[in-house]
Image (cartoon, rainbow, N blue to C red; front, side, top):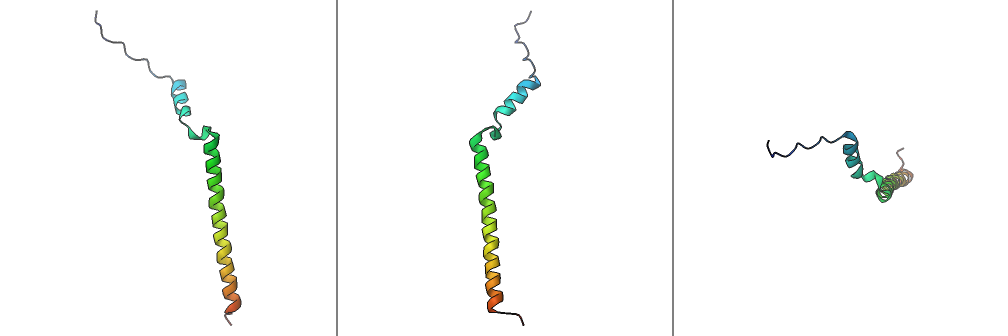
Length: 67
């Protein structure tokens, strides 16, 4: 007889899935709210940028007509 340690049991898929689920940041409400706020802020900045460019275009067109 040998005193060798027994081989560890293989990780079953349910345990591996639970371990992966435990590190999933989307489970946390604050993280989801952070991303929702970030998306809203980026969208608002893009809209503001477009509105500003449109306003500059309108002023330039009004003050300097082509023909």
